[in-house]
Length: 436
Image (cartoon, rainbow, N blue to C red; front, top):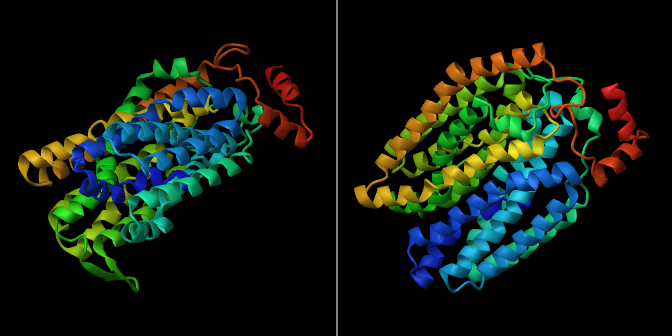
């Protein structure tokens, strides 16, 4: 997860250098970012189905190869068409890695799904923190082309090698977990059943509302810092002195990683919706504060960090909530379907540039983003929470009979069978005993 993080979070550093060389325009270059996010998210359900059926290993290995290839192509791209093609490859690869790792995490740790998804997603959120400064330095010293090639090949190789170490949990753990978080049920819904539920679409809307503001900040932070005239102003905090933009990007990556396990852990104890209300509301306040005080270099660094801290938790809260509600049997596919909301939100990212160009200021973009986050907070506490409670009670009162679609398990994968054998347990016997 950490080794594919730069495909999203390091992208902003390359936009201005590419525009300076080819004069394609920032809006045209950012279409590549949108393509990346769309394919990273909208193909995850397909990838998740393959993982649920055949295991996680090869999906991650192939994903790493595609990620490395994408940045290698970026290093020689001399047209927007080639840049967009590379973004598509990177999106497919990163989505395969991301969806597989998150789906596997919520399966392995049913009683701590928030923390497990958060720790896993932290790799993606904070994975670029240590490489932001080296990437920025290499761009200045050796050009963005060499930076794309060097980091792309290194990151892709790491992912491909580590992919061979992934295993799926035994099937018995999915249908009979020993412990569940507050508000979780044991109903095992298929993807088809899940998408028929209004709860899924409510969460999908909330994800889009939250995702749009955070993605805008991710893709546009370098541009905002430049337009606020603070990007290159030195800032001294916690014993470090760095240009404001570089400092903000590094701090944002750290906080964006920390927030995922932190709020995931909190949600394991106080409930998913209560945690959403707190975090989403904090995000709305942070965006408004950045709009008002972001022209000060120190405030720009601190407030952008707050924005990322209050945004990144969506990547632990939503997978955990989906699995708590609809079960773990098809968790990789189900969480992948929810993750497509990030792609839908990405469609709004270019509109930020359009609105800023039309108004001449980022204020309208910030106000709209904050309003969307506050609306998501209200929906979480006052709409989603009672709907989930009713759904869980009804599912418990009317359990699916053995052998129905909701109880059937995805075909055990090669890695799953080997994992079960290594513990001295035959997974098929376990399933037979459970159904009996």
